[in-house]
Image 1 (tube, helix red, strand yellow):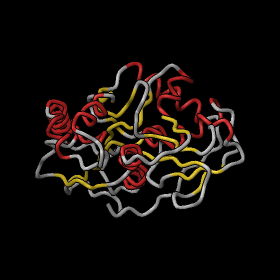
Image 2: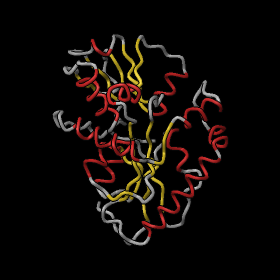
Image 3: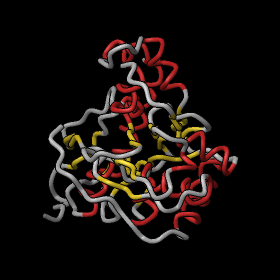
Image 4: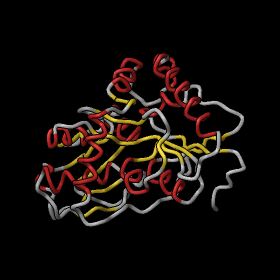
Length: 264
């Protein structure tokens, strides 16, 4: 159903630790938070079911939505630590083999496709659903952290953001806060102020976030180190990286993962 701009805003809540800094004080009586992973959040925005959220950059580039003032997003300059390819063989040997892809991803799977084509020279890779038997597995967010800190081993583990850095010399942008293109009412400015206030609170209260984390094996110190590895205020380098990502993605056949149900 299309969004009715006279009603309460619906704001996307990204249920990943790397986005927790946005939500510490994101409060207001004129909007509701809607929990969704990246692929579902993009679909909800496109369908008029969300008014704003931290959308995956692959969808931001495609949809050309309005950007929330202030340049907030999620980026890394090197390791992301939670966008990981777990493989039984070296990535260069995955051509003509299969990779299970989490149903939550929108940008990370496109980054993986670029890396197979431009970095590992393994273009003939079959991408399968998350529950199918495969030679490798792409996990993102807390699912990736759970596997790493849970001690589940894989012969080869690739941090996709780090591999992108090796390929391009640039940071990688995973998400950017945007509002729907028709969200022109006064709440857009009010939301930008509310979001930045909440973000500033989160960055100055990382210990509070760390004590709430329930990833087995991950200590509060690990949490602060992990969050500290992300860039949340996007600058010139991040904008250049988005352009490079868009250019490389445009050389690949158009493909988007299916939207799978999400129950939280």
